[in-house]
Length: 121
Image (cartoon, rainbow, N blue to C red; front, side, top):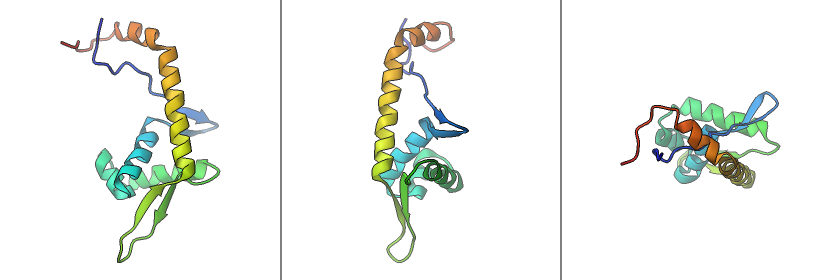
């Protein structure tokens, strides 16, 4: 049975009480890199600036060094960049996500077969 091709686990890495990294935070890091700002990333993801800022603050406080560096606004405008640690965390997260997905691929497909999902044509 073939479905829409989205049969992969959504992985959240929980270390202690904090979600160190999950799908939303990973996507936010990628959006910050693409847009060059938290505002642009929030807009791109359809979330409020406050929500994006809170997620960035949470990530920055959960890691030994910040994942996102912000620059204050002014005449040249502000912005944000993903740090070396941010790129490293994102790369490792994607690697873990891919390995986990491959490890449970058959089980995910079997599970998907139980759901009411539109089939590919």
